[in-house]
Length: 358
Image (tube, rainbow, N blue to C red; front, side, top):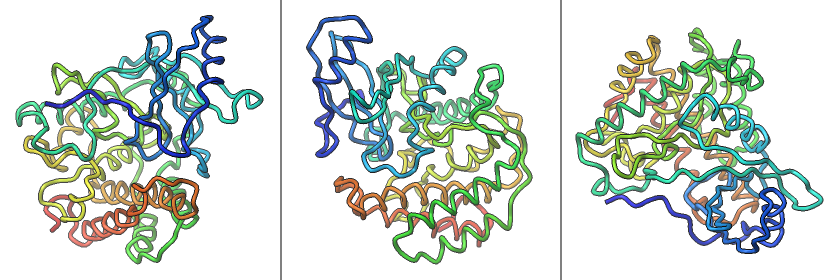
């Protein structure tokens, strides 16, 4: 039986000042309560997420990680604006309450949103605890349907054009992620060097432009505790933008680990997708084509891009750890993820397919 996603003790060096936050909440909500309990969701690797229990009501606080160097990925005002506008047109995002950036009161900016109560399938969820095979299959189909429905949203109507200009997105992505990798590189990994050149030299024609999530995976969706195939919400919109939806699909494919994948890829468990009933990567693509009406002509390219992008994201986090900006011991072995993801991407190119690579 899966349990509701629950917060726990706050990590060292990531504690918040409860007295100051309590005063901010009093001013925003007009209450005189001094009762504030703060806990932290410790499973994520990027922006920090806290659970605030105040006046018998739970809220979620989001802020950038301490020592963050990547402004675009940790822009709290941008993320707040996305959710605030999207929630008026899309029923799978949490309601937002306010954004706060008065540095004379507290030395970081943050925003507050509602808590979506439900199940989150974390990367280390054991297969023995996953839903039954038929429920898992239905979930994986609903998962890719949710991604395709997101890509159909009219971002102009939602007033999200400020997120990006669309045209030239593919090249900007490859060049941008390559620059981020070189800026945060700590070790020489020959596969990463190869991937940067290959991705740039094999750019596919862009299909169209839509709102894209950019980090769509199992642990960023909230499931109904009474029906694990029912998706209640989509979380973590920090990297969302306007771009080619097939690159969004590529990121999802990169996180989608299968039972017949490289042993090290299964061991690091990017997402709990190896359990019985889950679609394989080509089946995900087939279902995406069915529901989005978009033809995926270059599956290898998008899968390789997804793995490369994940590698760079992990490398950036590892760089922060190596520089001492974070003391989280989980980050000490992240370089192994960069190495195995780039190796799998290299193999996909050589074998010209995305399934049965090893």
